[in-house]
Length: 552
Image (cartoon, rainbow, N blue to C red; front, side, top):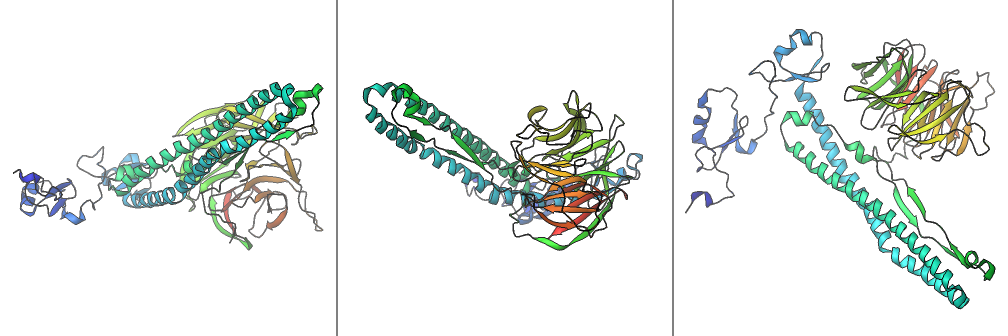
């Protein structure tokens, strides 16, 4: 009998192929019995690491240096973002650069992988299951609902007898077409959900594989895709049409028989999983200044970030800089045009977007490469933001500086233009002054119109909801001139009151809540709130970005 067929669930030594394994070479990844250890290490190679079999794969596998053979890279150059060995650190190429141990980066990425895996499996995936189940239930109840409508039509038809048979057939045909559209809508959304569920499952398996691996390269090269799955689709509710019978009038037979209302499809927003529901988080009685980032700019115009790891800032130079919360400069992007950026924004993938001063261009920096994403004719781009669906909202003004509007883009394609209210009056002041823009969590579009001295808020369709022109005060305040604007997880709106050195906090309906006026703000400009509701404020006079905590 073949000895290998006996106890096939027992791991054997890979050298003698007969003895039960007791040890493991954590460098070569070879199973060894005790007698074969000497043979395995007899090649004189000094990198062998023999450990008990139960402790296998506990040794980190460092990448080999591409320049210095037989050396491993135990450091990472933060400036070049590459692995380096000890010899590399002393080279001219890396003179004056900052280095970090790869084990530190490895451990940080491992924590991110664990966190992403947990969120994917415990939060995001179950939510998609719930959405899919709801769509399946709607499909299951679809025929019953339409059967009730058909019955109602038939009863009405019996009263009209033969002269209305043609009308009945026509209206049933109309209803059947709507039913097909209804079904198509639900199936389309269900197919999209199923597709994303498949991606989630595939990603989860890949994360599990990396999580169990001790290979440094794929772990450190791992780029989190979790934000793609956090952007949950709206919860689709397509209501049934209604049949409204009317009195019999043969001269208006078809129209009086009744009418079928069109499909009414509503999209209920699912709570973003960027963070837990923080409805219990109240405003601090006294906001706290937490940190200062010295940017090196004379004036900091704009700030944008997703978290404290990368905080982008721009001033009145042709350089855009990226810092961490400790103020360490991580990256600098030089604009070839020589112009300074009017505004900057970060999309969900961490790509940098910016508008160029008094031009009709929006550019994107992706994978270290800059490309023009949007080009306008007859208009100049001013401020911009990225929406929850990765659309781009841009405030623009005409070349003659008499008109202003908001334009929505999907990539480089224009999808929507917002300029007038229902009476044909301009929503925004017609000039080249800045008009910072942001999207609220309820999809309202909020613009700080500096010249008009107003925060203008429209809904997703561009319909005016309200204006805020500052809070009446008995003190001798200067006129309200909003500069920066941003929103937080509670749909609160924060806007910088440039003249009066403070921040106004409003609720989503435009009601004033409180000021932030105790943090030594001097002529605040750009604002942003990260995923953890930390507020970052640009300063006009000091050239700094201030971090402020204003929620409990």
